Amino acid sequence: MNPKSTDHNNKLKSIIKGLFREHKHLHEYRLQNLIYLAELLHVERTDGNTLTPGDYTPYRYGAFSPCVKSTVEELSIHPKIKHKQSQRYDGNTQVYETTDLKPDLPSDIQALVDIVMSLTKHKSNDDLRDWSKSTYLFKNTNYNKEMEFTTYTDQLAEGKQPEWKKLT
Image 1 (tube, rainbow, N blue to C red):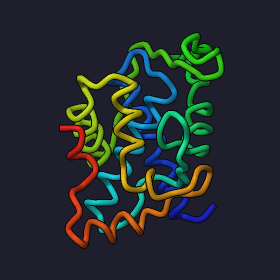
Image 2: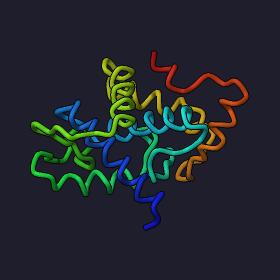
Image 3: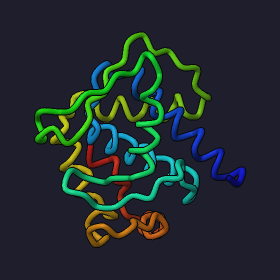
């Protein structure tokens, strides 16, 4: 694995742990959309640099990354993270429960988790799904095709409003 991939993977694990710390119960699709939001915030603040190694595609519950899913599954072997099948979506998705998880996070990741939490604190899973589906990248990417974050940064450079502002 190249150093950049390792750094991206470590950042992804950190953001997941930070979100787990903030949510005692976290549905898989909510987690995907929270990380997608963090990704958009990071891309905006770093002139197009992605936060994670994830490839996002449009999905019926919002932006989805197989890399995020596999990393969450990898982390769920931690004794303080439990997962179970969701009854809400025909038992096909996971709900993660954490107990007393207190990871040390790099300051940039902690700041990102704090922003994501402040933007989504009062948003339901359905609100986040609808927001995710309303984003430029989601609407301008064919189903099951990879979202191109460079097109988002191009839109920002042309004066388009950042996607996170739709949550406020």
